[in-house]
Image (cartoon, rainbow, N blue to C red):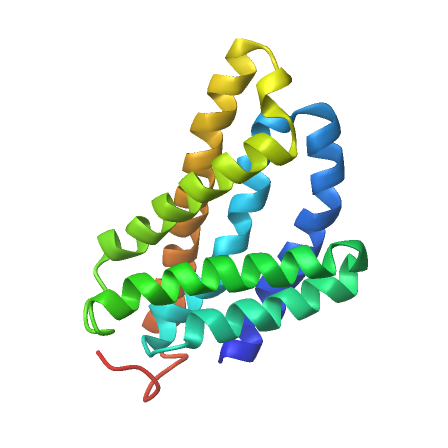
Amino acid sequence: MCAAIGVGTGILGGAAGWLTLVVLATAPWAYGLVLGSHVLPGIIAQQVVRRPWVALLTHVLAALVASAMAPQWTFRFLGTAILFGGIQEGVAALTRYRVWATARFFVSAVIIGLIVAVAVWFAADIGALAPWARITYLIVGVLGPVVWTAVGLVIGSGLRGAGVARGLSRR
């Protein structure tokens, strides 16, 4: 199940890798929507399988697939996989992998959004942009992972509802 989710989300990640160049060159304030898509592997995997380590495993598999599509980003894909998957696993571990409420997923999304917003602020020199672009960037940077988390939860719930992971998950 993790491999299937990893391949599907890895293809999206590879496309996001190529889109990164265009967005950073033309609308850097919107980058949070592109980077936020990288939360999908772990969110979908945890929503479907609901077991320890599925987020991190699925993220790494997605990063490998994305790297095949956009090899110039290989190390960034793997770093993002470890960071995002680690945060998602950490939030789940805090509840001993027993709480799968929707709010729990959004906690990890906000944490990821805050970390990414700060990191990209410096990496992409967002401070050099006009004030409206800086404010927009911060809002989009934090909300991008939140929006993609909502998308991932819908996909994961659909897969669970279809019985895709019957027998794999706990509850």
